[in-house]
Amino acid sequence: MFAKTSVMSKVRHGLFDLLFEGEKPSAGYRFVNRAINIIIFASIAILALEQFEWIKKDYEHQFDSFNNVSVFIFTAEYVARLFCGGLEAQFKNRRFATLAYLVTPLAILDLVVILPFFIGFLVAIDLRILRLIRLLRVFKLAHTIVPEWKQFQTINEGRTLRQKVFSALNADAYSGHLHSTIDAALVGLICVSVVAVILESVVDIEVTFAAIFHYFDIFSVAIFSIEYALRFYSSAENEVGEGPITNRLHFATSASGIIDILAILPFYISFMIAVDLRFLRVMRLLRILKLTRYSTAMSTVVEVVEEEMPSLSAAFFVLVLITIFSASLLYLVEHGAQPDKFTSIPQAMYWAVITLTSIGYGDIYPITPLGQFLTMLMACVGLGMIALPTGILATGFTEKLRRRKEEFEKMVEQKAATGFISTAEQEELDRKARALGLSTIREKQIEQDELSTMGVIRTAETVNGLSLSFRSHDALEEIVTKIDFLSPHDKSVVMALLAVNMTNQSAAGEREDA
Image (tube, rainbow, N blue to C red; front, side, top):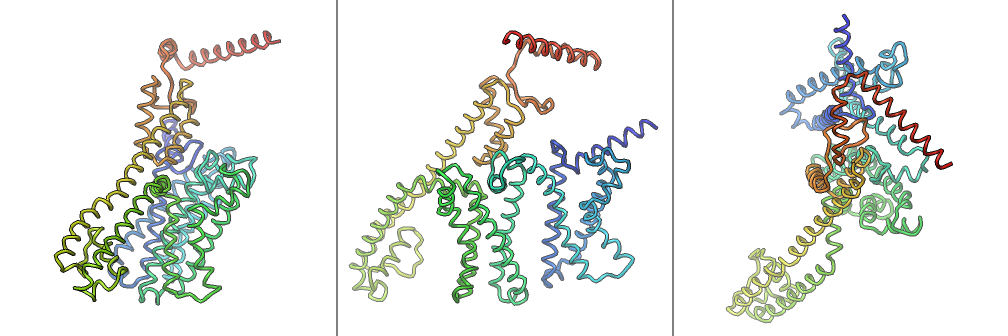
């Protein structure tokens, strides 16, 4: 009986580690949480696709099968959460812990998501109501958001509202996991918004879902407007300026700040002046530029362009001069033979651009021997001139990545200088690697190489989260090897003796100071 209870207890604690975020979330929890979230988003996407009759007609069986499987997964998750939910810290000392978890908002939400499916076998339910209830699955994301919000509140205890807003929208030591979730939500909204603008250009789709597109646009603009207002408000916490006003002006005039304004401006312009709807749709597509804020690769390209702007400007200036010179020369040579093609120098500039870029549409070309000879020369020159900006960007990009790698190596060296890297320091290194655009594999490789050079050993596991890596110490390792053979009781005695010894040394040091 005792063995059976022990097994059930292990199973319960194992499920708890998979479904609930503890002080240190396990890899299994992250995997299960990510899988559940993917199913939720897939369910919402399928619900949207079902609104198109021509799609639903062809894939109705697949959609129903996915819905049945997802309900089965959500049901298994709900049962498993009931089985181990009582282990949460807030219920541990309660007599009916499982019952206490059963009436929590998250547990009730999980039940509401799956209950209509089973009721449908007993009572006929309007399909429209069932579809509406399926939308509630999105609220299951609260299982991810609520723990992250609690963690964020704990980390930011005692800080001002402005500091909290800044940390939620910008990655720093106080951001926690909430910042990543907010970024993911905004990226998702941007992508859906851009797709909506594209679909709206299809007449049949626009006529059918005009109201949905309209209200979604209002919703997305409201979210983007709130985001901009919060970023402007919290940008006073930046360290780039001398004060709040300077920092806010710096944000408003920065590339990301201007892109944020352009993403919402067309909506407000339409209330002031009559604007062609096609123009507004194209302007709304500028929202895709907001992705540069969340893409390290895109932000890196922007930084490289800014750094290499003098060289790029010189290359483009020379390219403009060659274009004007080539166009003028061909106009003089070809105007007499083709007055309808080379009507002017601006018209000849069109020919020069498509020739120098080696595109060559073939709609306009020289027919005189001299014109053809000059075209061959210009095409050769064009190859080199077009390759020049590309080479500048490639070199700048490579140099940028090299500097980032050296910056991360220097940070690893600083953290390991004490002889060990603690869990908190490792988390700081992870954040820095993400900010620098380093992949997890690249980050670990750099860390391993740097630690090996410094003689620091990376351990497979941490002891109470105290240390991830340490510098080898033969004498201490010998003691640990000997202690490892002791019984648990003897180990506790050794630990107690160490504690007493440290207390005596501390007391002796205080007497000497006195």
